[in-house]
Length: 83
Image 1 (cartoon, one colour):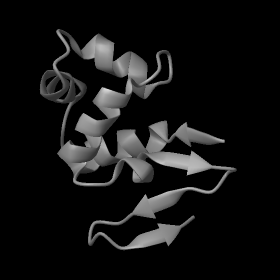
Image 2: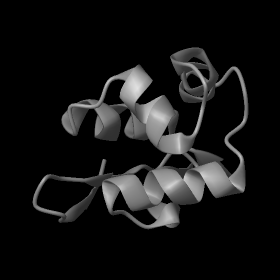
Image 3: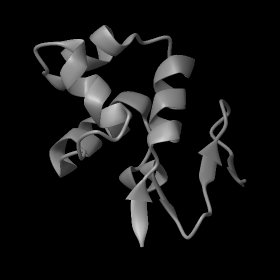
Image 4: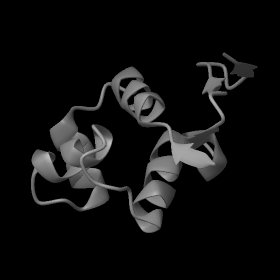
């Protein structure tokens, strides 16, 4: 079963130098808390929001998921590696 890779999304955000507030604004949230709850797993990412996240970080939606304990990591030069 595929699950949203919350750690990956958090890592992509931090690597891009975006604060929770900046990410929330880009996704249309009124406050950072709305986005923060998604990033920590307190809420579920709506499909439309995941699509926006993928566009912001220039990755495919599939790269925001992991399956059966396998995570695909995107490095800064866009190479994919299994970790």
